[in-house]
Length: 470
Image (cartoon, rainbow, N blue to C red; front, side, top):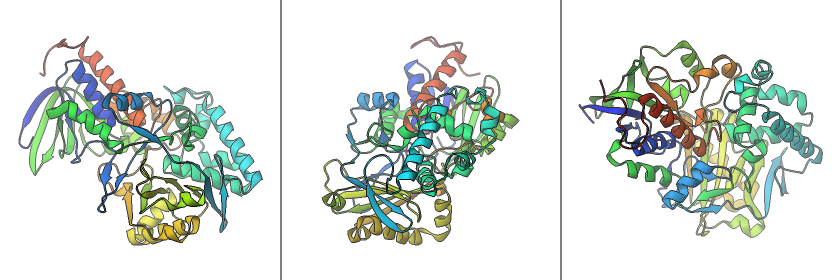
């Protein structure tokens, strides 16, 4: 790509699940496609690696659950195997300085708080069903719902401090954000898109039900392998010039300029990241304003790896819910064969920002101390401790998803998927089902590809539409 000008029909910016799915569908229809990716890998927020000590982990999205049909279909197509998240035994609750154990969806040491928490979750899930997935800003009372935060809703629906603590942990785990940062309308839409908050936080029957043998990124690699030379990594885009029927995407590779001229572009990036590009002409105000109001969540993912999953011997399942400290939630992340043990946890929201200032050494010390108090002395002596601090990842800048602040959806929601000239939008944030998840990324790519095919006048493989690049 260095020093090269390339012409094609469609250029896709971003080789995450969304961009690769879009390129797959376009290629199947006979469209000449080029996919450019800034990173030296594909997969976006899915990133499976081998640690320095030789253990396989997922630094990003890793789970698959029921109704994630796009992700399951791709796994079946590529022959990727899954296995259930380990849940046998009891989970640990750390509340007000005391350790408890429990079974079920939420901690039960405070029965009143547990009952109130369950009631609030069910209330949220029922209310979420009233929010349209395609146009949440068109919901009844959308302005009122979008004018408040999830925290203000909690203020009027939760009395027990323990219930508020339980819900705060769930929200941080799902969004990587504080309840006070989230538009209540956006929260309802997001819950509806994922089958309800109950579905989003649970393992069996929920979003964390299964994992991929060998990691989730293998699916992105499988898509990229099939696209072959059409996917170019290590090629950051810096500028996009666009009109109604022509797009010029440009950047630098190994300090050499390059550019691609195409009839259409699909930008498969989070809104706030795509807004950092140099746009000519500038993006419409509504699109740019939307991007400003959809920041990335704040999350650090931590893996503690052990010689064996010792907590299982004590009847524990590796899950933790805590009301203080850095780690507020964890899961058993051991491999399917149990050849070693692993616990994965999340530092999210305010804690992510607080511990970023303290640095990795302080984060590691805090994590081990909290794992030890939850799972015993052996938890403080891992073979390896690995963290992925997503806010510092150059081409994502946070995670697991872009959130929507109050007023964003009702004021600017129409711009989320609306093409701008010859530019179309993909990415999990634009999905109407499983928004924020790998499944949502795949469906968004398919939707964007269909838009482009319609705009180009394609009717099927071998149909060359209305002509080449001009």
